[in-house]
Image (cartoon, rainbow, N blue to C red; front, side, top):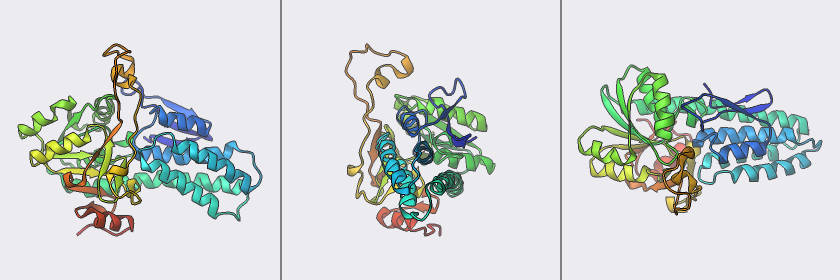
Length: 349
């Protein structure tokens, strides 16, 4: 099951807004439609957004009937700006778009049609590599899990947040496939409920034991020694190891530290932003207050009430036991270990 794919000349996405009640797909035929799907959270999760944006760039190239490379590249630059503006926090989006733009700029000897083919091939490579990367992260992370362990998980980081397999939930999936028996406590993850809607749906399909808990209940279960490990994903990681992830992650990290519970982030190296010295420089998306007041149309408070809705928070690196990447587990000092991971060095051993 792929969250995002190229299908019949269009970008096909699982519509995550209507899960778990219905599994349906949407087919997008313009880069503008792709950008709107990212903004509206038809697709979400940093790796999935990155792959979607890459296919969006390939789609943009096919929308344009320019016959010269220079004209096509001008059109692509405008499409790149639109896609990168769709959601500002997840660095994978900008990484994927910039990857395709670099191909366009560095391949000036191709004619426009060949460039269109090359862009689609690169987008497909990014999608396929995401799956392989997730599987490697899953293998590294599974070494931390023992039979009978209970894991706390925040938001959704499974196949739906990636092209397939998953990051933090991918670790749980890999352990499950190795025969390790786990129980997972899923934070519901307000206001969009990615934990209770999406992560539970994925674990149901995998046959992994789980309970959904209120976001405010995590401390209770930690205090009662019912959690052995915390696994979360990331939308952007600064050079020093500070992690931007779904709102609520920071408070889970603080609680984990207070209760002496290991706290791991799971993310590919494409989520690391070496240009940002710390999490203080990560832009935090502010979403519409209606998601707080009336999530999925279910009114919880009068529409005129005031509300604020930051989509992410930043967990300082001091709260992390490690960051699980496809190169292995990065540990403090993160400025060194993350730089090694970005250089393609193995962090194992």
